[in-house]
Image 1 (cartoon, rainbow, N blue to C red):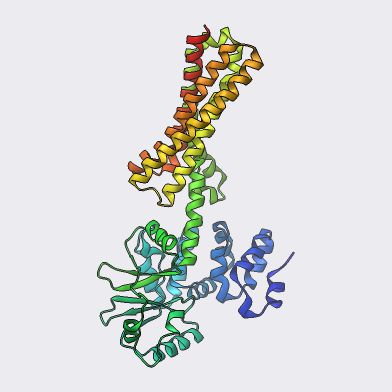
Image 2 (cartoon, rainbow, N blue to C red; image 1 turned 90 degrees about the vertical axis):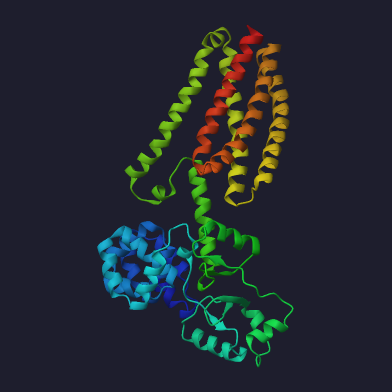
Length: 442
């Protein structure tokens, strides 16, 4: 098994990456972790801590001193500083306060500024470290200034130069590769006016929904995006690495919600807390199962008269549930990606209905033949075939429309859709199958 000491001794300082150190730490026991975390270079400690799952913050807070934690925060970029302090507050608010008091005034002001934004606002995810220049500056002077800042480690992960007017309003965005082909002896504005390229900035408002900003990155294939206020004054930037993290978090959240789970609770180590949260959804599922059972109870005499119905009944409900889940997953995913406009929603519902109808006829024929060969009752095959068409068609319809309806009601489609869909497919499946059996077979 690798160790932090071995890794550090076998790599040059410039080649050491926080994620590699975090990978080693995750493989250790609690006792080994306590020894190894102290070996992580203090300038990398903050980045390593943020690479680790949240549950490790308890150990980090209990092992490291206030001074060591404050150094770790100081070495982070502004947006990561806020994330680190938020994690620390959740573990120990008093310790977080002590760490904050040891930070420099500039770091404190930046953390307080970013902490004022809500979790769903773009400003909460921006970095305040920027490479900016005035439009009147000579290109050569700008490049020399950038070199000094970069060599002094005051700037990291810079992809673009943000050009502002004297009032600090954002005017242009120039990628560094574009900057290098400018005439170094002319001003930025002269180069921009002489160029055939467009340098109009694509920016986000600081109070804008972060999900919209994520869509901008995906749509325009951006590496970084400036953030401005309502007056157009440049405040910070959002980088692609933060957006990737957001995409992963959102994907995890959607996956958990579709299963009726809370992503925050599941990441926690508290077993009782997670069990309670899961139980709340299981209670809902229990009542939906009772609803389906009540439908079966209505046709108890029909089932008693023909045992074959009890054997085939779960097949109808299961096929409907699975078909509905397929439609549901497609629509929830497209909603999450922001790909469904008003007209696209109508198109997707039509598409799912046609797919459901096509599959309904195919499996109706297949299951009708199987039922006939299995039990030797010709009309039983007809009953299950008709029921299969009805249930798969309804599954496709509700699988597509329920998420859209919940979205319109400002409810997360991933949370409630599965429960509603399961109830609908079970009830319709049992009712159609047993109802048709009562009409046709008895």
